[in-house]
Image (cartoon, rainbow, N blue to C red; front, side, top):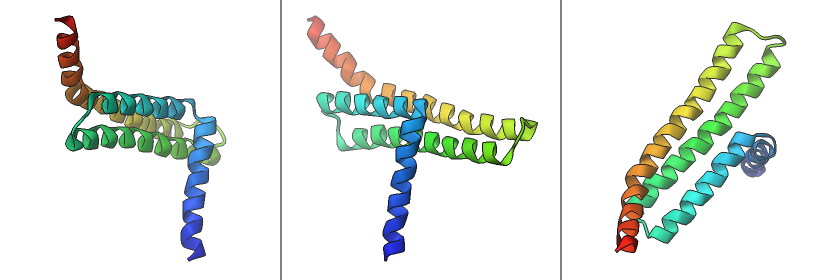
Length: 123
């Protein structure tokens, strides 16, 4: 049973390390916090919350996987190699794709709420 709980501790240490060392991860975590605060203010439905939190989780997960890929490639490749560069660029592209679709989800879910709020405020 200790090994089971150790795996949670190791995962937490990995997340903490990435938060300390990866600027982009810190940005995505702050963006997720900001979107969560805005969502709470707007009173999203459960389904809307699920979409927003799922998008945030996907981006943060992609950033963590990107960090792992970059570190593993750096360890394996002592010098710049085209295959190593391709692996790192592809992992970074995964984060970009996740972030792009998260923004689209945010616009689809949060946008109408903000638009209604602004329309009511303008009257």
